[in-house]
Length: 294
Image 1 (cartoon, one colour):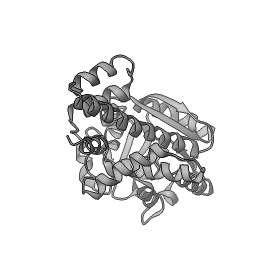
Image 2 (image 1 turned 90 degrees about the horizontal axis):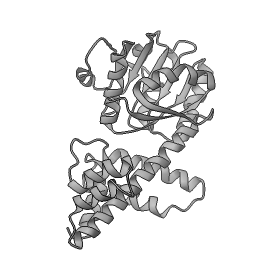
Image 3 (image 1 turned 180 degrees about the vertical axis):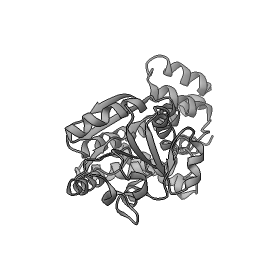
Image 4 (image 1 turned 90 degrees about the vertical axis):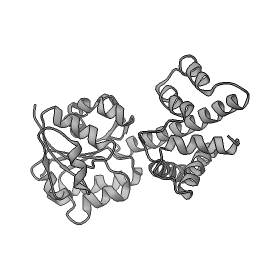
């Protein structure tokens, strides 16, 4: 059934997700601060000049934005969409943000008569294009049931983490930490093997097909083993943002996290060297290689 949808945020992840909704023949309006990004979309859609214009008369609003500040600006900044929402509209926030930000936005939606759902995703842009994302979800139950059919059109599975809107964001941050830690582990292991005379590609292939036969080790392992990080799937600035949010979450919980501190500093070091635009896997892996003198 055709739904009225607004999609805000046409970055590396937003473009393929929006395209899948357009391909499903929904009535889609899109907004991006840089309108030229919409030229990458094909099919029937409307290009809005502001967030408020994009959401007019829409039942579902998807946001896929870089960080908390961007999401807050689109929601409640100049020409923000919160006050323009129709009653009962459902905001599906796919951004990786602090749990506290999700709670604050949820409170705003409740006062406005609309609904807020946290729905961050796992998967790189290629997975988004193939509608193979793993989607996390938390928020009000009735709103989740209405949103799930749409989420199932852009992902391979939807995992429900209850009615607390913070829950899906907690899960996303812990998951991104696990990905960073896995990349550090692979980079160190492959570099150790290389310094002892083995071919790092052969090592990655062996582990990716045997005891570490999992998507993260196979996909990121291939990138790290081949030193091939193009096209950039996830910028180091965004990876560092997630490491920073996870570090704050650990600090607030009074939980020591030495491995989290390690990857935090890997990414911060890359940004300090002017390499924030490179893939986060490259920043972590090349940090290890440089430390090892290769």
